[in-house]
Image 1 (spheres, helix red, strand yellow):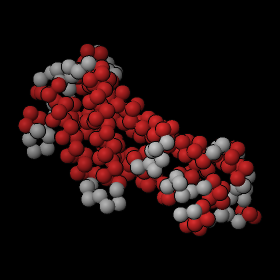
Image 2: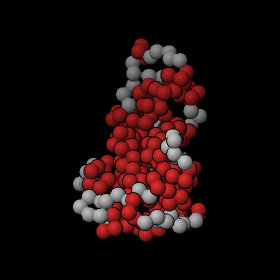
Image 3: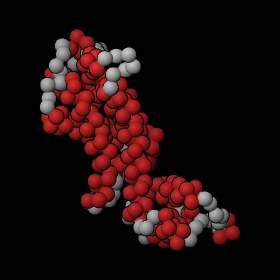
Image 4: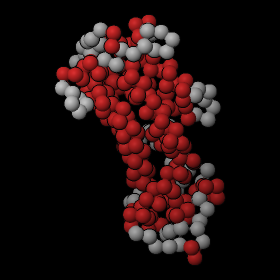
Length: 245
C-alpha cells in the first residue's frame, strides 16, 4: 500500500482552516498519539510522514522539528510503550526485590519462596499491558521493522530490563548463579511476551484468565526445583498442591 492509499485509509487531513498552534510539548504528544495509532493500524512501512502530518493538521516542517525522521518518531513510540510495560512488571517484582517496611533484609527469602506468585505476576503484567495497549501492543510484540538492528534492540530493551530484574529475584531464592539466573529469567520473559501476544491476537482463542492460569504453572515446574527453601511455603496451584503441579 502506498503513501497515498495510507492517507486515504487512515489519515484524513485536517482542513487548513482548522490548523491551530499548540505549545511544543502538547504538539509533540499529539504527534506521538497520531503516529502510534497509524503505525499500529497499518505498520511502519505503509505510513509516511505525510500521512502523520496530514492527520495532525500540520505541515511537514512542524513534524520534522519534533522528529528528524520517521524512524526517530517510531522509536520514540516504541520507547514509550516499553516504559509502560517495564513499569507494569516492576510493580509486580518490587515486593520481592526489597524488604517491606519493618522487615529485615533476611526476610526476603521467606517472601520470595512464593515463586509461583512471582511468575504469575510477570505473566499477568504482560497480559495487562497488552490488553491496555490494544493494537499498540503490536509495536513491541509484532513489530514489522525487526530486521533493522536499531529497532530490534529498542523493541527488545524492555524484555532485557525485565529479565534483569527477575534474575535478581531468582538469585535470592534459588541456587542459580547470576548468569544462570539470567538465562532462566530471559526464558520466562519470552514466555510472558508470547502469552500476551496470544491474548491480543485477533484469531486467538485463549482468554487472559486461561493464559495467566496455565502458563505460569508450566514455567513453575522448572523453577520450583531450583528453590533453596522447602516448598512448604510455596502456594498451591488451582486443583492441587505446589509439589504436585
